[in-house]
Length: 605
Image: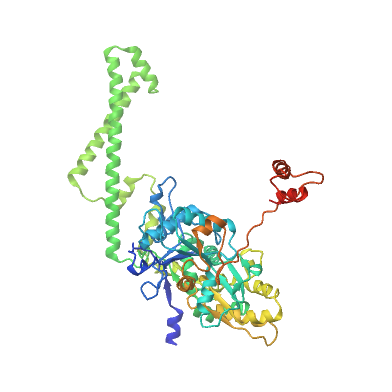
């Protein structure tokens, strides 16, 4: 019973992680000899990971891990841009943050160039004018040719790298975790990242790009959905429900229900709610606004109030005396005009003072003089005695309109007020939100997305294959990506597959050992097994001859589909201008063959 009570009352605190700037490394000697070692860059939409393609514990892991964001104020110099871990707290600069991605495709290559500068400088690459190390870079599944063309142009033209290899991050993770199986591998990859999720079928070791599908739901949509839910639930803490804290809730406090509706029914129970709810403590000031007030404290407060009243009354008396003196001096100046014989100015000033005669002026001067004299005597007595005033005198002198009702407002200080728990007021009770945010991966309609969920998309993809291929694919269902790390995700997919596949079908679901970073380790393993210049590498010569969109395929890459530019079909009765010009330029002496053959060949060229 004691342990149950402790579990029920357990309160969690937000860590509010602050990143520290990345150090600038020096290139190890083994990365230069006998030839430059490739640099492996996992260019993720949430986090970028970079390191060397080396074996060992020290160099065999990513040297740099930072968020794929940049912050630069409008009009600031390029050198003033903050990248990744240089931004210790993202929330104050949230409105300035920019990314190179639109969903999972790189479109902003100015930011991408800043990312590369950050990576190469912190890895210790100091060669001027070029980067002598080959680059292994991840890209999105079915990456548009224009995006790859711009990336190749950036790497070959700006950094003058010798070789580049492109691969899909989830496929690198797939092959890294299936090293024990005999190639070629066949399976289906379910990948969920920060901006979107993918269903990638792999047939005989190669990606079947024609049947790849994307679901536009990922960790970004889950964090925004959770923020919206908690802000509606706690409108008094809108500023405290930040996107960074929502990402922390996603990573550490959310889970996936095997049966969503059945799990929601469990949350209807008060006992289950108290046992499973996570109370998130927000920062707050511990200064109490009420509580038990002792007699000494009440006396001290009363003395402070009386001292303040004395100061206010003294200041008001001085101000009133000064105003009366200035008024008296002005009236005396007008009376002197009459004594000196300036009658015209005297009558003009009387009109301004709204007086009719000199007798009225003299009467007003006498009364005002008496008021000034009394004020001086009162100030003199107050400065000589300096005795505290009585409460009633102080209140009455402060404001003549002060009534008994206003005096009653301070009486509740003497009343013992109930103790108010400020900590409980600054707590977020995260209940069903823990499972609702991960459910959008299976039901995008929860956030208003009109598209299929992940498992419906998987069923659609499997239906495009023969029964034999479906059986082979379902025997190796692989889960990877940072958004697949929810507890219970594997069990949920196994349950949905059991309901989806035919009766007595065999299937196996495996989770990546490190879903968020296995793509980098897979790219490193591929770079160790395939030396630059072989299959999967694009050289500078290939780039110049075949164009920036060219892709050298390998086991973890996209499929290269070159774009064929269709020639315009001439209208009936028209002759192409090119063929007419070429036919006129070609003579029978210089071109062998019948005239019709010559015209046809030149038209085709």
